Amino acid sequence: MNNVSIGKITGIVIKEVKLKEADKIITIFSKEMGKVQLYATRAQNIKSPFLAGTQLFTYASFIYSSKNSINFLNQISIINGFEKIKFDIEKIYYAMYFLEFLDKSVELEYPGKMMFEFIVNTLYTLDGAKEDVKLIRAIYELKMISLLGYTPEVTSCVKCDKEIEGDNYHFSFEDCGLLCEKCIEPIDKAIKLNKTTVYAMQYIIYIELNKIFLFTLTPEILKELRLVIDGLIKININQSFRTLDFLNEI
Image (cartoon, rainbow, N blue to C red; front, side, top):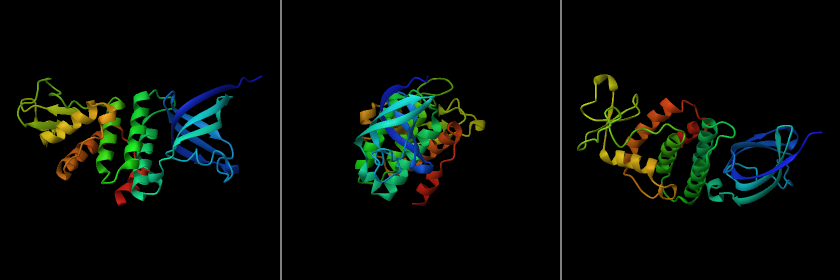
């Protein structure tokens, strides 16, 4: 006889796969267990109690039963559906990209309580954003890179560990960090950075999560930050994101 266990998690639906007979498999990034998959029976049915709670971006509590290594969804209690995101095409694509980035970067049951808190904070910020959300994207990507264990060295020289003097900030993608003038070699192909860009990177990586979105950047500094982040993603994440193609067309 197979034993059935009951569990409860709080998380966000980051992926949904529609199956025949109106069923779904949803992927949730949860506070308790990281990334988890649940089988939602008849969730596509318009009369299903699971219809709203199994949609992308939904933040909820999920009760499930486990049998034969499959988690079956039993009950949902929605905390926030992020409706403002769902009625703004630009925000939809940004949110979809954030979730795809997360899904492709972590394995099932990846432990990530801080990562969970960060994605919740990001969606709340995106939901309430009234201006350009490109900075939210940059903050999200750099913080995720750091949380995944690829934190660049942005406080001192990555080679000699000495503090950078003056405004001579250079960033090496090969060494994943700043270089002082004495350590730079032609082979490093380091790019020169404005000190404000470096300060922004330090802030994003080390500030408390509840303060991470509380700053602004000029378009010029954001463009420079974008250059660094794109390079870090290419080196450390090395994934293609379908939603990013749509986002770049907006």
